[in-house]
Image (cartoon, rainbow over all chains, first blue to last red; front, side, top):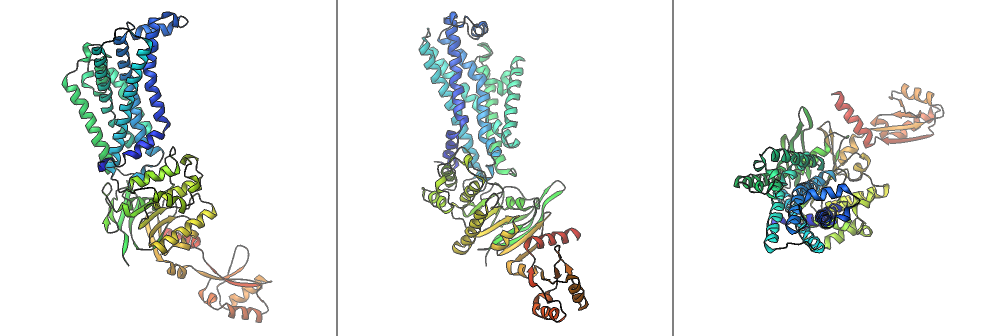
Length: 262
Length: 306
């Protein structure tokens, strides 16, 4: 194992033992479950006979009850919930060290601070990608259980490509959240940052600047802005990649250079 | 003897406030150095600079011959530390917390984890989650994390906080044995001055960021003022008699007669004889040494007036 990842098993142990981990897995199982429920309601309107609101929401969410509509719904739900949950994951992994006052135990060790920060980023990345896989597998299982029509290999391949790639793109935005958690020495500033970025992404997308605002890119790529908007210029990817790399670099530099007085 | 911790003009300023101001000290191998000061005196800031956690505004810290630069690798594999109240990962058990530290310190196997659990009497708590530990056991876990790799230097910030009297004695004995048997150098800050005076070989007193006094334990014994305390049936008459003999006489809060003079403490038998002959036989007579708390308050009082 690279010396930069020596602390990784420690980070993974902390994640495995945390309640937050189980909660996020639950949330990412719940997303396809809700999408599946909407499909069921569209297929069998009598299920929601007593809930006009639920019926209306299901009708708004998807035009039909089939695999393509179901996959599109999961992609959009993932794009919206993804940054919120992934942002929280990064905020927790870094911010908890300040909130639990354990950061000082990570600073003067044979394992370098670069290794500690890199392992934390790697652990957060693995956690988020695991959530993508959980939602993906749960989505397939729930869709099969409902017995949706119009399955095709091409539809499945398209879903797999968009969902996993959108998840990856969303994770790339999150090192910036880690940086804010370090600068703010806790979770709250970084969770605030996530909320502000989500709001700004909505504004940017509505104003037509979405492709140039990295936090709007994953949702547009997932089709939240319609099929036409999901075709993005290469610069969108470059901007997003820059935000990811800059976030990683700035987080590592901060760990090495900032005064740690908590 | 080799100096293993050295600070030269170590300073940390936050705006106009100097949290630590030009602290220069040296700790020799095998010493137990007590670092005394009131809350906010600059003890923890000094310790954080020694550990490379915060960047000095001026001056340098050198540990085991290596200049400490925040973010750069220092002699951390030979150093254990405990800064302020120890915290552990609450969701991990005591054993898992120690395993995590062992991994980050590059220690292989379970041997050191088992050994330190036993040494700090944490064996029965191995499977207990850290969030469920009492304050005393959390402090023990903090010490276990600092000691797991048998460091050459141990830097401890208020290690007896939260411990009951038995725990304090246990820590005192542990530090003493580490110094005597393993040659571990201990740099320990504490507000518990009595504890410090019992185990340290040298002390430094920091006040308002400045190191105002540094001395060996033996020197401390010399500078602690001594007083001859006595009591008689007729206190007023005895005090007047002693004043007439040229002694400076003070009265304690509970009315005892106090002679704050080294000469009186050196010849208590002569004063006893004089008083007996004058018809004021002492009911008791003893020499009393100023405790470290009083000395400390006297020192910082002098510093305030300078």
